[in-house]
Length: 620
Image 1 (tube, rainbow, N blue to C red):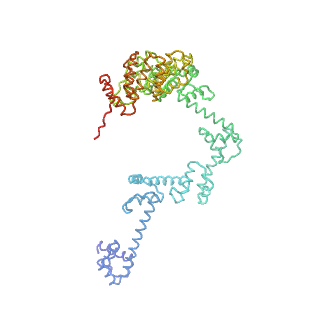
Image 2 (cartoon, helix red, strand yellow):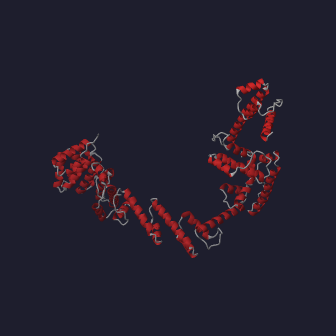
Image 3 (cartoon, rainbow, N blue to C red):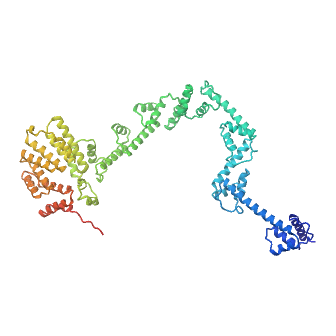
């Protein structure tokens, strides 16, 4: 018999034994039973013809074996699937949806479950499949296993990181104290060698505690237990950590003042060393906190500035690098302040001059000039140099100083280059500051007249001269403060003023203020009284003309303006008053009415009025 036939006979015999049909005598490999058993062993479903043959051959026990085998396979398949699902849940791998039959994950998770380390390739596989949480647990399992080996706890089977043993071993690794329940858990689980590690650590700590109590003069504290708050406090001191306020308070309560003093001296010594390194003090070995250099460096660190006395102290000790750092630090502080919008004071400017930092002075001037231009609405003025006369003028206004006549003349001569789009938009609006392009307008003009008004008020208080009231009232009006102008002349007793010219001036100014707040009847009363006191002055006539135009009594207004011109008024001033009426008209229909009257009367003289004609809205 050849070898192949022998092998087939052996195989047939083995299958008959497996499926408990040894009583079947025919052992020929050509037997139908051999075919059926081979198909059964391979999990191949039998045909009806084959099943019928088994029945006819009275081999029903094989059919029963087939059913049991199939049930076993189904059950085992389900068991594998269920176990895999549990492992995925336990090791945070539920998002991995590949079948356990074709995935490496089942094998990897079983390795973790048995406490074995993963290979590098297995770790890479976890990362490549986005199983970062699983990999993290794997690292924890590895660490847990290593700790069990280190602390003689390998007989404990569970290697999952949520185990209480893992927490205990981690504490031992960090030399942290175990509580009573943790220590008792080790004893109850017969981990006596692991518990011995803890006892050894406790013994070492007790010895260390005793030494620290001696070292930091805390002997009179009677409690020697490692659970005493004193132990971690002394450890902090020895580890060169600064004590917290609560720790200092506790030491105070225990009467351990000497310990506090030692800790604070050490803290100052560390701080002194750090300051020396920071400020390049390389050839000064003394680290005592009582050294004056410590106080100097600390002052510097807190304020970024040292006074002349401290600078001399450094200079005498030839600490030139330190002085350079001091100066640069203070210069940078001033730069930061300038960038933050602060203005240098006189002492800061003097320091910069003495230390050759004119560049920072120039920066401060440029920044301040830009801020002032913004404040006074003259940013469009092109000259940005701090040497500009405008900078000097704006500084005076900011300090509420009076301008010189030359300053005023310069402002009147120089103009702002206003963008055409802005000018075109605002040319017929009511706000004067957008229509004028001269520097002497807008906020500068208001600031100037406010300063002048206050000056003349103070002069009146000083001298009692009521001409100062007239001047102050006029300036308040030009500063757009008519109420202030009225307040100045509210309680004047005109009967006691002898000079008619002064009475007329005060009444004209008061009448103008009433006109500003649209109390035209009061304004007219003042104007007529002013005319009675000084018929030859053109000012009250001009006021009357303006009042009539405000009331849209144009012919009457023309009459009064003509009377003013007869008495020396400049026709251009009349036009300015009329222009003001047009600009300030709140009712658009009334504005257009004035414009039509002016253009009809003299289209050439009043050509400026065309720019105030309301443009139709283009819709569509």
